[in-house]
Length: 408
Image (spheres, helix red, strand yellow):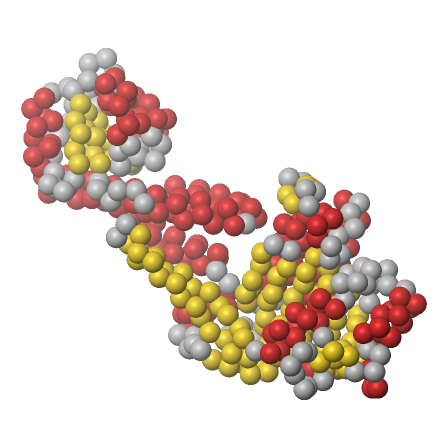
């Protein structure tokens, strides 16, 4: 983390003014002064100042000209001009044209000078905090680049650090799941808790066959993850894991979705259609297994990790859902990897909340997970690539016993 000690650079060709300025500043601030404008420009990158203040009338170069050059060298620094000009309207026009933060008239009042500089320091910290935060977020999802650009443009237009801070808080919320933001505001997140939820997961089949494939400057797994995540966000899912070749989301934990069965089914089917369109457009054959399962009384908790780094306490939180049904959901999905195309496997528990789907689903038989006496009937929404003969062989292999009983 960068230093929290404000660095202030002041340029004035009158040495006495530099001394008076330095004495007026708080002791904890780092003050660097220059009589020579060129020496100042040469040293700016090494100093990396927070605020640059320049006298307007100097031999050879004006303060506005110097600050314009300084803006090219250290664009994050807040720039302020010091002038004897008393026509406020004229100075405002000059400041706006040169894109300078503010101006100070001479002779200055020490208290007013410190107040002005404190606002500039606050503004610099707010902008730097924004740049660091969004720099990290941009690495996680390239789709956020456009939103990040809009936010940067917005923050450049803020007139004061206090307004900038309020706007930043509003915009940061868009990086967080809407259900979580709502729950935090309403103070309805009480963990650990047990909830009836619908789980949805996918996994890329034979993902090793697509290693090294780049489409539109992104890997295959990144495209697939984007297709799935966009639908999950749209329908109010909580994204619990989303890395590598698979993702796992669930609906209903925070009451953010009216009908968790319909929402999960919509995400699954729209994802399958989007994947088919992607394959057609890019002449690829990427296939996934998709599974849906209703998981009653699932334990949901928040894991909190706290570490102190250079004096600052950093806290990270994530969701974690635990039950035998969560494990069973993933076993269901792995079961259909041997089938061609992108197939959707459903549990009877899931169909109990969406009975209208049973007419279009193929019954596979009863299945049980290792160590569990409970048998759950499974259904399949087959892909167009799945022939009747292959499906028949699949059922006879995995559900060969009486009443279609198989063991995971």
